[in-house]
Each structure stands twice: as C-alpha cells, then as structure tokens.
Amino acid sequence: MSVAASRKLPVVILISGRGSNLQAILDAAASGDLPIEIRAVISNRPGAYGLERARRAGVPAETLDHTLFSDRQAFDAALQELIDGYRPELVVLAGFMRVLTPGFVDHYKGRLMNIHPSLLPAFPGLHTHQRALEAGMKEHGATVHFVTAEVDGGPLIVQGRVPILPGDAPDTLAARVLAQEHRIYPLAIRWFAEGRLYLKDDHAVLDGHTLEEPVQIHSDMREVTTL
Image (cartoon, rainbow, N blue to C red; front, side):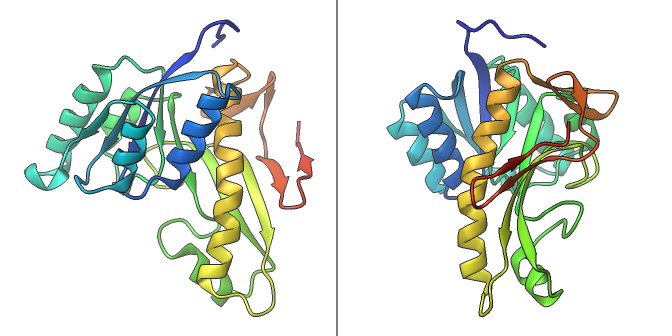
C-alpha cells in the first residue's frame, strides 16, 4: 500500500492505561518524524491517563468501557463501529489490554499493529520481565507485530533488544525495555505510513522483502536488518 509523501496516514490508537507508547507516537507525529494523522485515541478504561495525553495533544479521546457490555463479542462490535467512524487505515494497539475476537482482528487484517514487551515468540502473555529473569535469559526486549487471532502470535516486524544485567529486577529491566519500545513502535508505524511495510500472505514485507526474521534494533543504537 503506497502513501503519497504529502499525505498523512489516518490512524486510531487503542489504549488501556498510562499511554507511554502513545506519548512516543504523539511526540513523533508532532515533530514531523511520523507522517500520520492521529484521528482518535480510544480506551476501554475511563480513567486511563493516556486519554489526558491525547487531549493535551488536541486528539479526540474516546472511552468505551468494556465492563458495560455483556460479552467480548458485543464489546468488539461496538469498538469496531467506533473505530470505523474515524476511517483509519491503521489501528495501533498501545497497551490495549484486551484479547480481541477473531472477527475483529480479521476486519482489520493487515492494518492492526501491536507492541509486546518480549522478544517474541518468547514469553507471550503477561509478566514478561519476571519470566525472562527467571528463565536466565541474557537478552530481553520488545517486539512490534501485525495482529492475528493468535495472541502475541502475528507476523513479527521489528524487535528492540537490551541486555539483562547482573542484579536486574523486573522494574529495572522493564525500564530499559520501555525505552526500546518508544524507539521501535514509531519506526514500524513510519514504515507502514510510508508504504514500505505491509502484510502479504500472512508475512510482514518491508521494502519488498519478506521478513523471515524481524528487523533487530540493539540498545547501542545498532540496526541489523535481515533483508
């Protein structure tokens, strides 16, 4: 999918909490480094601080409280209707703590992106930093991927890697991983907005090459592509 250089890609961002990655995306868009138009930020939790971040940036902030719906399907149907009202070409999950139904995911296939705090396929799910430490890993990090019905199982795009240091605790490790998240998520979104990244036959394609492995970004600022 090609996006003209003068055109900004319309995006909707979904959050559930403080919106740290949202802020990184807002900042990149405001600086001109990210050619997107953030049309709305939507949270399933009314008190999410990320909504205030959106308002401060002049972005419409919406709440759709999942506790008011009878089941997951009903919530996802209402969420889809709300999102589609903004006509986005990319939907970004930035700390959106909901498992999405297959129908919802299929509706946005190829234009639904997530970030996960581990080097997928290692440690899908929750408590990734603690699990990485308990497993004796030497490296940890974060992964941006296209979303499929398999939780944290979609085609991988880019990973930010950090070393695990002697004496690390989950919170110290999480802080270093978060710094990488703020780096790699705007990068992946920019690739998509520029038409360089897309999904084809359930594989991520970057600059015309199928990504057999995700692009690797190291904490020393090195980028190692696998094209």
